[in-house]
Image 1: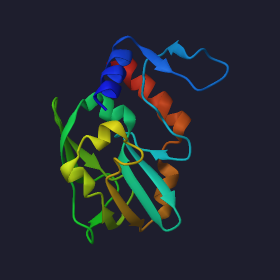
Image 2: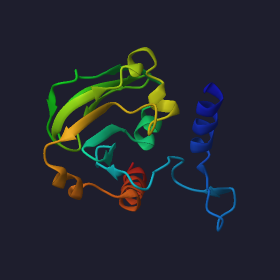
Image 3: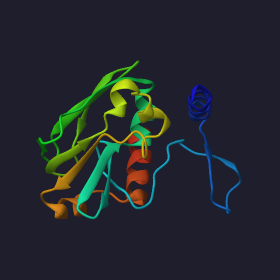
Length: 164
């Protein structure tokens, strides 16, 4: 994991990114080294949502964890509570800063990723898989329609990074 984090931060500093597209060489110049996955929805505050059946899984994006740096602590709510679109449900503390995590959609919390208590670095090493934060039962699934798709989120991040 340390090697992956070093490689990621080094590649980011050099503006290199890996590409799986056969049209591009293995490494191409890019503004970002972050991965954005198709099939997920994204918020402008850098959270992702994976909606499967009646459950939506929420976490922070690769782009967000990359900007935060090494995550050292995660504060999460308890299962059984509820979240509202745009409101905070937890916090992520890194060696650089502490950031609130906002819910991209509303619903009832049905599960919390307790692994993050002992291994907050899972957010860095696996933001879309092992580093998920909460699972909810959406109260208004149509809220997903207002979120960004992969292409829109990628463009949003590029524009945001260019502005800084």
